[in-house]
Length: 372
Image (cartoon, rainbow, N blue to C red):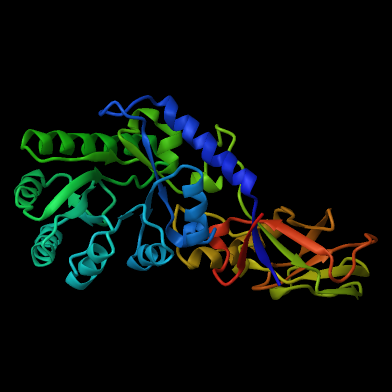
């Protein structure tokens, strides 16, 4: 049975490196060190949301962010009492009631959000903790940055809402510096207008992992770190982050295949001679050779391997699984849950340990996570 292994010392190393880098950007506007908000969406970037969050707490991280109500509740049900920010806004009253009941910091980004939050606060007789979301050019949640007058009129009518922060989100910080800088300036312009109109903005944060590492001048009061903790980033790693996560399994079968025998779907590989192969029970559904595609988290990213694997084959870009410490070439296309590996004369037998470095967020949640 396969498992995703997370090396604790490597994860501790990444947390330390990120803390050190954040401290180098100096103090925030309140004279305090830049705060680190750990984004634990997507099952904790694949590391297991509860265990990963507890590990971060043990290593000095105290603010967390999630993308769904289910993620927030899972943390609360696990006994995690630290601040949790719900990054997605909602005007669905039942959802707001659930978030407020569980002391989750909500996001407001529209007139409807504010109206519902005010109503829930009045009914529950409490000040609702919230962050303002400004849409600086992502097109999802938040007040559109150019509609400043509407934003001001809406935010001046927050009777039962306590603003603890204001944020935005970059769309292409991992490769388009020009647009990222444009989004940042839009955000700063909105903050200045809000303050001029007597609206409290609280803690300011806009940097995701990419922007955090590339633009120290944009750190503001806090930064949101997700992929950097895992060390799986789509640009130059300049602070020595280690890649977290590798799959481990066991060789399930060894067989001798004759010359000219097809291996895998589409028949793109035929054995050039009689060949000894090992079958290892993990495939693309376990994250094998699945990569980031434009910073998205959809299931389709796993399916993209279909085209890539064919291209990689014809480009002769070989992939290897390490079995009993030896690199063994993967033959043919990667299957859903299996790969075939060339072992030749290597002393490999059924039951031997096999491992493959993977991006944890692409590893199916049914796979056991093991911290060691």
